Image (tube, rainbow, N blue to C red):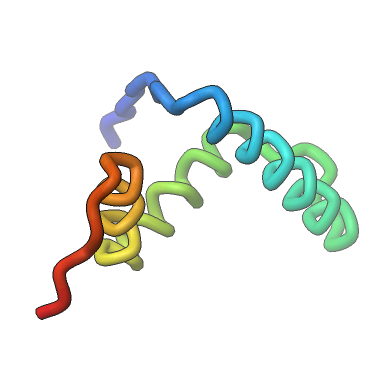
Length: 72
């Protein structure tokens, strides 16, 4: 299996929100017996969210540019 490493370049506000969300997710994981989540697991989960929700992903990119999603 090939490993892919790519950097992330979020806006500062987004990064701070991500850190807060990750903290909450880590608390949920601890409650469910996972005390050592790996960065790769979070990265994979983020990518899966985008894969499963491409319209929402596009909506967030448009929103960041000050644009609105055109309804089909």
